[in-house]
Picture 1 (cartoon, rainbow, N blue to C red):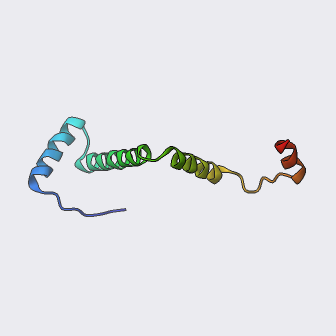
Picture 2 (cartoon, rainbow, N blue to C red):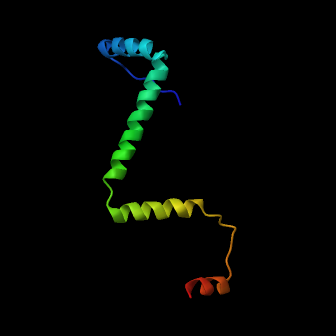
Length: 82
């Protein structure tokens, strides 16, 4: 996805200097910075979840990984419940 953004001259100069130190293009540096920022915000949101919300999220993630074509017979369910 390509997006155009306006960056003020001071910030652009700083980006150019940082990109030289990092041996990256300005575009690559900005992409890296945005990815880091998004990851930090996701981590921050996860850290702010209650224990119950974390359990719910874990269960949701497990449910998304399940093979929906794999079935279990009623007999196997009752054996597991014993």
